[in-house]
Length: 109
Image 1 (tube, rainbow, N blue to C red):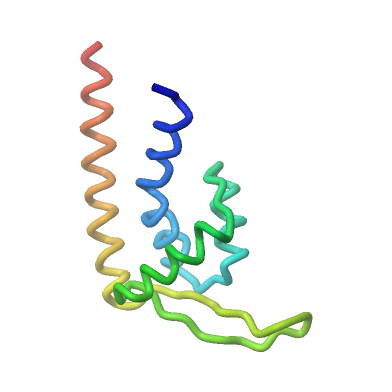
Image 2: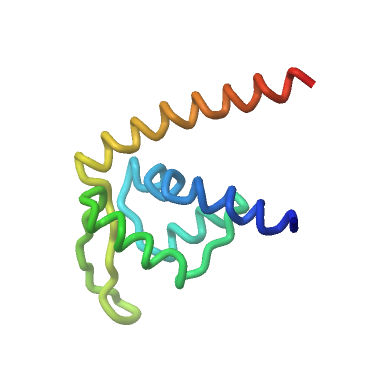
């Protein structure tokens, strides 16, 4: 078993949570989302991000708006919907429970 495969699966498992968290307080353009994910050491390429944003939008968790750009084509800015905000609250609770469970398990060594 290769450690890189396990690491990749762990990152993928929290990616939706991280994207929704980034959009919690303000809308963002996809390249801004990628930059924030990179700051958190979650390297994501556009080919991964765009399908995920589309899936979250289709699930009613995100909405978007177009804005004209002074330096190129119009930009699509994403934001949470009310449903997305509620979903994020549930994920935050689940994340806290999961982190606590993992920490308790690791302390038993």
